[in-house]
Length: 120
Image 1: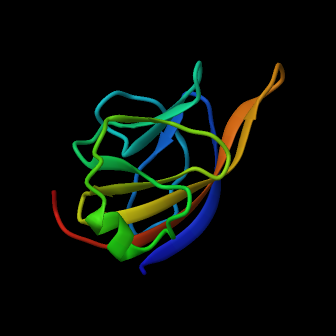
Image 2: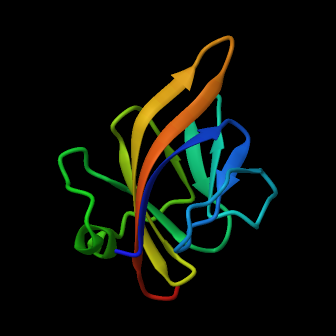
């Protein structure tokens, strides 16, 4: 494991997956690893990496993420959902700790584990 952190990401923002804790950035197509958009709540990838949902009963591990081949560009998410991202030489397991969507605010709280991985 090279990094582990919890991060709030507001709607319309995204993060880059790397060995450093990212700061959410305003969405800019094709530059961010993971982007959060609403209506419905979804995470998508935009940097050429691979995104794949994990079963709710699966543990978020390096091996589970490497074995996961249910690749998609967008995952519709709810609290406690899990997904894997592979790209930029990293493998990341992501858990949705909190999904907040009300009149005053919209954000996700993500728990992310990053491992050194394979290039895509």
